[in-house]
Length: 66
Image 1 (tube, rainbow, N blue to C red):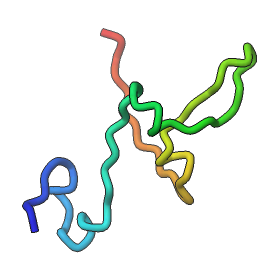
Image 2 (tube, rainbow, N blue to C red; image 1 turned 180 degrees about the vertical axis):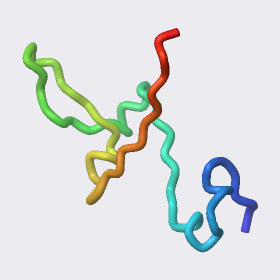
Image 3 (tube, rainbow, N blue to C red; image 1 turned 90 degrees about the horizontal axis):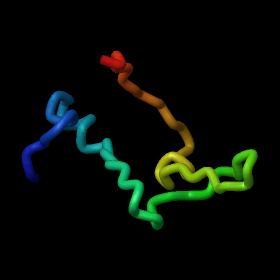
Image 4 (cartoon, rainbow, N blue to C red; image 1 turned 120 degrees about the vertical axis):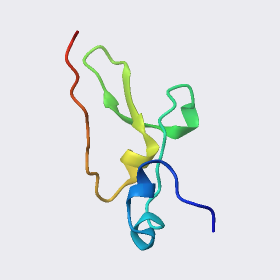
């Protein structure tokens, strides 16, 4: 089995092997799913992995404007 890399390298291997990391690519239309239409009628798209997930645990990072 290949060595773990990225954030999963910090986890115990038994846990890390059950995690799938998905990198968002806005130009990959097949990876997007329709959520709803905005007020102007424009489609609101989200990543298909989030759209199809049973549970989503959002994790973000706040940066200062400067």
